[in-house]
Length: 317
Ligand SMILES: C[S@@+](CC[C@H](N)C(=O)[O-])C[C@H]1O[C@@H](n2cnc3c(N)ncnc32)[C@H](O)[C@@H]1O
Image (tube, rainbow, N blue to C red; front, side, top):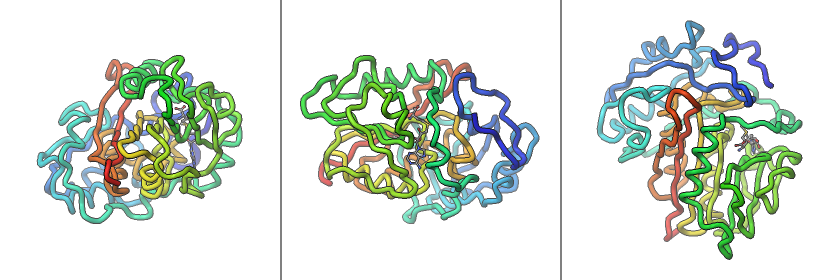
């Protein structure tokens, strides 16, 4: 289990039982009137973890995402809303991605994609972790969602790609396709994954090019891992290239992560922001339908939340 070291943040208030990841967001709440740039000092003062230093300050980075997105777009869905780590009030997760007025320019700075631990990911994932990173109800919710949107099991010609995969993909029990590729960082984990028909070990932060032909996959999944990708627009462009027209990309996440390995913009924002961030990846990569957010959290407040941001590749690309 990784330790939180040397950055002034102690271990989170709720240690995972079966998981080796920590909650990404604490019980802070950011209220921002969309249309007026939030007062960052105020935001940062609220952005605290149980009285400890705000994450942005700990990481020493500016809150560029919110400032820029709010400043440049002027509106998200045309309404003021509350972005809260647990979405206690304000719009639903679904509403966050409706009618976003995206800034013309990508509203990120290079430092938004920095990680606290910039050492080799290959080293970090060297040893297999045969654990689950979210609790059982969250996994069950994801599996149920997959069973609704996946092509039927054993459909001729269907190919699936599970990116950032491990020993589990959370597919419905017995789900099979002719080709189910797993990409990840640890060969032992991938070898043990029963749904995969093949796998590739590749560090996407070193090489974001996906080693597949154009238009080859019907579905791409990525579970609780999008926050580790530090060249997300390149990766999402690649996802678009390898998806078949109309193919579906499903990015799911909770509020946990190996936070020293997650990008700064993720560790310093809450669940609602994460929906916008992933949505922005689809938008700025291009070639996708407007992204949709789905909240599949089981027992809100009592088990891990689970969110989906998904989109289909445009038919005409
Ligand atoms: C929290 S685990 C999630 C694994 C799996 N998707 C699951 O639901 O259990 C994060 C995964 O992200 C992948 N990952 C992290 N950094 C990566 C990188 N630089 N390139 C490719 N994959 C990476 C690793 O394969 C790792 O298994």
